Length: 137
Image 1 (cartoon, rainbow, N blue to C red):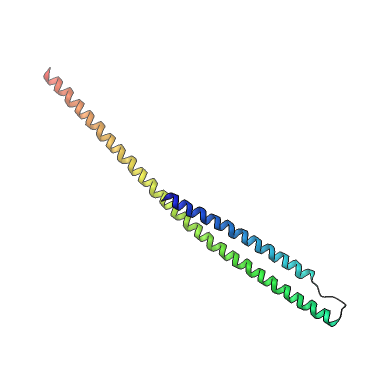
Image 2 (cartoon, rainbow, N blue to C red; image 1 turned 45 degrees about the vertical axis):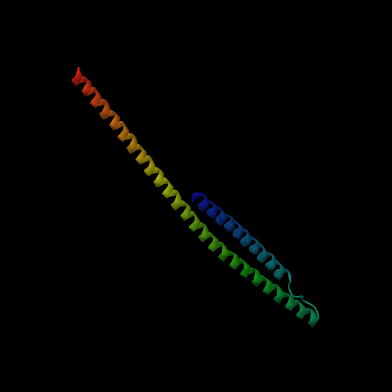
């Protein structure tokens, strides 16, 4: 059971690592789109068509930037969800570990009681034999 819990936690860790990579990738896309938008300034001297085309291109770049920012937000949300799953998996694994530790401690205590009972039995038997010998002599 502990191995299964560890495997679940490892899978959750992998998902968190992947989601962090997705966030970084989305943030890099936002930076690229911001640079594209800054680099696409409107021409200072041009025909009306060129001005309109430039404005439409900037609007398109702004839309792409907004879309990229939304991707970052969504990736961060997925990361938070996966972090919560990882925290739950870690709690479950730790609970199983604690149960195993308590069980091992109970087994050790039981073994010690049995050993002590056996030693007490041997001591009583030995004492009884010694007393019987002493009475017989």
